[in-house]
Image (cartoon, rainbow, N blue to C red):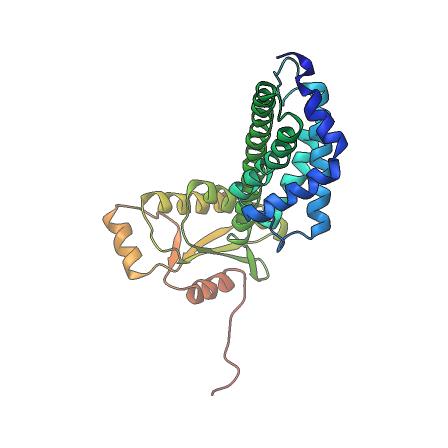
Length: 291
């Protein structure tokens, strides 16, 4: 197919740009992917206009003998607009299926106009429809790839934020820190715990650190090793480490697994661990009156 095969497509885009946008929006509504709950009509129309303008520019410069590559510089504007639109839609909660259907809805207004233009030339109509199909399908596939990449970035960012929230180092008293652990303790989280803890020890000049595992559901060999390594790192920083929250079940499990806590102090509750920690730094809690 010669390069002039894009002439009819470009003529349609230029002659009825606004009409295509409106019909594209209408198709999105009928397909249930317009998401009026997330985007106003003006926002949706603006996104469609920007994408269609960039798409038109790409078709003009990036289709040669019915061949094209969306990675080519001719499609640079489309990729840039697509990245912005996709990021906005991901952040507002649009699904991958909705995003792909949103792009594929562009076929309908283009097909109807090609049919009206080439109704007396079936051969050319078929060729043009095939080209539009390939173009929009490639557009949709690329959109989905960008969508997935953006969503993965968001998921990773949320994971990091949750990791930070799940490893809070709290200053209980002057030179006394505690790190309450909740949930599972895998290698990635253990590394995060270690880094946060050691940095806080340095900043606060802590002398005692309480690792409270009351909220840790299961202590196996791997978890125990993470805890013991953390305790060893704390000692290397010149502080004493106390592991609190050792329940009878956890104690029994550690014995059965043959885990030796060595010189690490352990306590059944954070209350007793705090009393020991305060004594270590020179404080004593006394009762001021009877109740």
